[in-house]
Image (cartoon, rainbow, N blue to C red):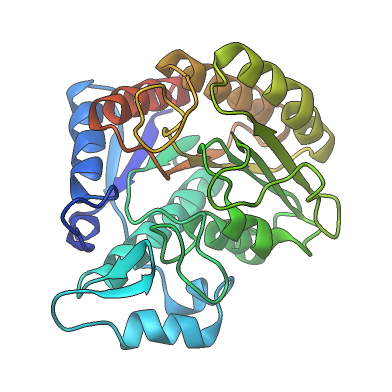
Length: 308
């Protein structure tokens, strides 16, 4: 069964500010590299998420601001790191729509796994505000969609972006049937993700590691703290916040991972998904700001997703 690739040209129309790290060239690097690798994927245009889908995790006033009150030209700042242009709202709806459609596809058995190559990223977006390059929290929207629409009792999000996904954690804090795990650089943006942040139901696992961490301790920490907790949770669907900014060449962080480390964690998560979730895995692009490394790591990750 093939792996699906979801993307859309609307994601290239989100604001690009000169000198800003989150640029449309990121998505171009991912798509160019994945398509050149000839991975025998089935490609789909990402649909637009509905307003009601976004409202599963975001406050109505914030959704109205993004969807109805955006600029007609230029850009406006939503937070110090995050801007909105005339094309941003549609790009964010495509990003969330990609993950929702991917969930529908894996639940219907059309494909076992999917990768959503989209921007803007999402895991920092909070219920009532943009943050850290993120407008809507696509992976959290999809997790609650899977629970509400498909009736799943246990949905897991695993986040291996080098930055902690504070928005996803906040949205999952009081949820019993949603699990969030993050392995990230400690003492780093956005300043959340301590080990003692466990959520009201104990379904949040944070693994902060020091700057300079390479693959060996990173793999060990994942195996010890996250994989065992995932096995106990036994998710029926696994969603991935796939950030590749923990790569040693990334300019915004200080981890020292290689593409092989992202292959390894993908394989670990696939093994677990086969045991508890009928192999169902949906991955969505988060960070990664060295274009060459981002392209290579995306190919490595998608290749691993497609393994039988």
